[in-house]
Image (tube, rainbow, N blue to C red; front, side, top):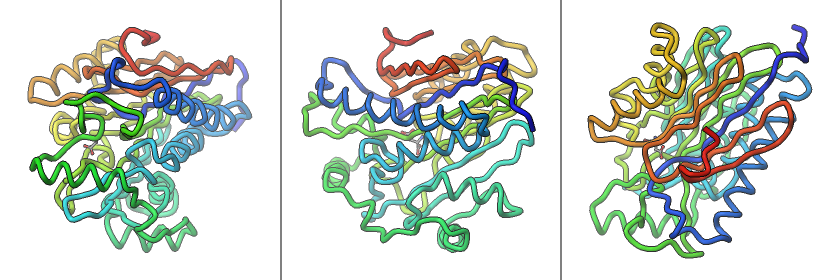
Length: 325
Ligand code: ASP
């Protein structure tokens, strides 16, 4: 495959959506988030710049956020009711519509790599629990003690959620009181990329919801709900109230509106979010097409987000008024 230098490449990422208010976010914490978002963008950019694949760019961008304790994915994953970290991730390639996903994993350091391995090294699309972990180990992926995912602030969040009998999406935790420097706001992470070969990919990774039931699976590992990619339409990664994103086939319905109804990408994303809102959910979507047009839409007060194109200028955002679009 030859890379065309005329094809504009692009990467768009998110770090979760929720009740993120500027007035409640300290300058220090905001800077920390923007720094990891920028690192994630540059990891993906480095792949795309040299003609690497969109799948590799999505993986590289997500690994940076999984390795940061700031986001609810990988290292910073939230706790289930039983005090475990059950992680999930998915990835999809738009040229072949091949996809891979894992859910309920407790020992895989980078679930997005495991999803990628399921896509490329197995005949399956989704593996869960111990089976996914055995497969990841067989593929030479890094396996960690479940303790690796234990962070004290996440543990405290679980204790609060247990006391209030609430199942909480990450960014909404503690949203009823001011954020402080000690607050750790985190979120599901995702990326969509267009490479120099004109191909699209999407990926999403999460620790799910604080105080979720054991075995609960969200939208992030469900192809068509949290992740979707098709070169004929768009690549999509979602964040939000997972149950509603599953029930609306959120990522697929966004792509379908674009492919079948030729809707502009922003409009398609907004229509999907409206549908989600009509059944009591909220969140955000990042969307990218083969021309390099993209949208970062959310119906919450904030969404950690960023983008970079072939000019190499990284942009990060959190709130509505600073959105590029
Ligand atoms: N969608 C994720 C889930 O339901 C949560 C999030 O995006 O914050 O697991």
